[in-house]
Length: 387
Image 1 (cartoon, rainbow, N blue to C red):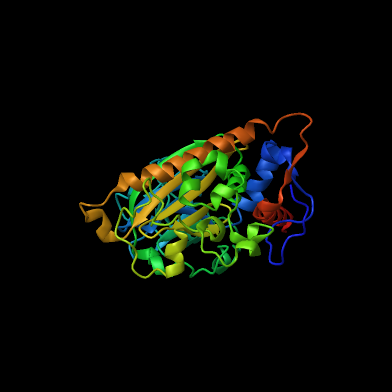
Image 2: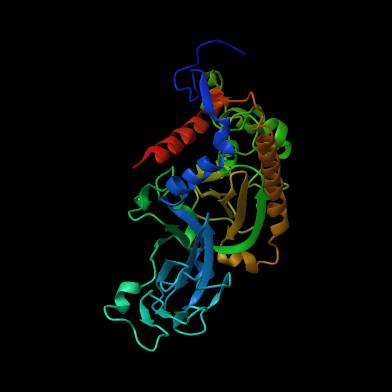
């Protein structure tokens, strides 16, 4: 490896940088701490608001050992509550999703009745005890927000400002008109790895040449093990070139992330020339999701920790509404490609997890091109230390 000093503007790490302790990826107590201080305090992506299209529609959502109800009330407002009756703690909704049969939530155990704003309307007792007030026994509310058709919840008493939820300005993907998009396909995977292993893999491309051969052909700079032009310590040597191997973006002649590089659906008309050249624009919202904008579709990937060494992943594909009605629309062309890439990522994350228990392996090393992993680790550490 070259020891030449990097050119000014180089993005990579210079100093030898250790990774997190190996136990951070499998220790049960550490996992519970991360759930309490990261997953229960930040904004977590739940679903598209179109899944709650009509009044009284609901779905349940579990994060860790916290079980929630998210619903749309009669006024069209999305509400969120802990799925817990105030009587003796029974679960209120036993189905994963559906439409409330009446204008209220009825506990299946003792038939306490709440309205869709969470207020207790009546108990089943013949007489309520002295001092018992209905308004003191409303459901436990959960913060919820509908941003551009994406529903997020936060269990924190005072959640973070949502405008700082993403690693880019919150209006970065306005050209895709996110709120107007329609879900065309959803897939699920369960990865046998810690949730941080996935985020580390997501934030580097040293693995791309060996793990993602087809993706590396589509995005030539990935084939060099780099994410960005300035990840190369000697990037100015190719500054004047427009070759995608050095500048990033799709290979010449390609338009989108698909099996053949073609756009498989109606393209978003308001994208900039730079967005089209890149072929993929990312917005990342730790800890639970990221959005990728392509010229013809959006990919939404969300994570949920299932245990210290198990993580659920959901992949949603969003399109312009007219796309799904177009007989020329080739869903398979793009889904097969992204499923290939995500399956390769899932597999290599599991490979990573398998080796972490080695007794002498105290921690790994973050290499220069993995500077975003260092940023993720710093974020995790700050969150764990936050009061």
